[in-house]
Image (spheres, rainbow, N blue to C red):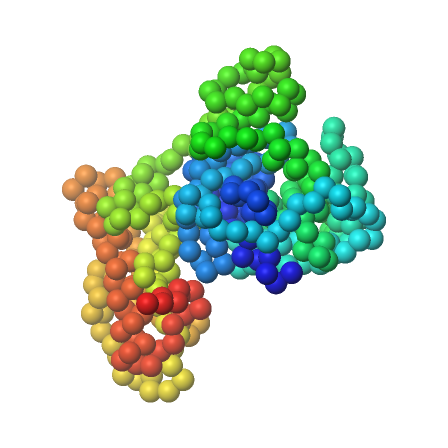
Length: 359
């Protein structure tokens, strides 16, 4: 199944991360509705840590499915096949693919505990494979690498109990969706019609529609403050969101994180390089010389960081807003400069968070 991982993506929103995937013959990315809830545009990250903007084009909140359109990934072929003729049976080996807790891609193995476990008014695949936050929306595969389900949830108070949407239920959603444009549509699970405007009831059958499926999360003052700066830096804020009031992106090779700490301070920081094994004196002298003001260089767990901290009250002061925002954005450029500087002048390896840049 090694060749399937390039068809599996990390889904990133301001509310957290999940997983998604493409299947053979279709251009859109499949994930859970609850992964993207509150968002109509999200970020998608591939195995090389490249991020792309994706528009949410279909949601069915009752089944917990959503389809995403990422223009730059549209022509990327998938190796994951959806075949409605395969059987799913008790004790069958199953593999959960995704990004648990937002970590790098992982695969966990288990068995099918029940292929048709009733929960509410639907049946799900139940498995004892490890399912954790972040796995939601990823594919459940059999030993041949074929899709048997979409990972959707686990009981928070139970071990070794995970669930997936059956591949046949997904197949129906795929067959029903025949649109070529990228409008946001909500599917009525009662009559299978699609709704484009916010309503309380389906105009075709009168079924109640949860109005929250049309709503987008409201950004905070801090979010607007940071994202206006990201736009000026030439970066789409969508691909930087990694949680509520938390942004993460690569500027060149350097990973940059911007986040709130303790509701008091706004931090911008970047893990640059690992300390070398020898000849530390000259390097530490440079780090302590504070040559990068208004930023600070420091060492934590044998890793060099550049950081900038500001009290939240300062970003509400009109005379400081632009200066502070500029300092935060310039840290990204400085980080991309410094990781090369430490590598070339002090023989420091790039940090594990760094992105490999190829010509």
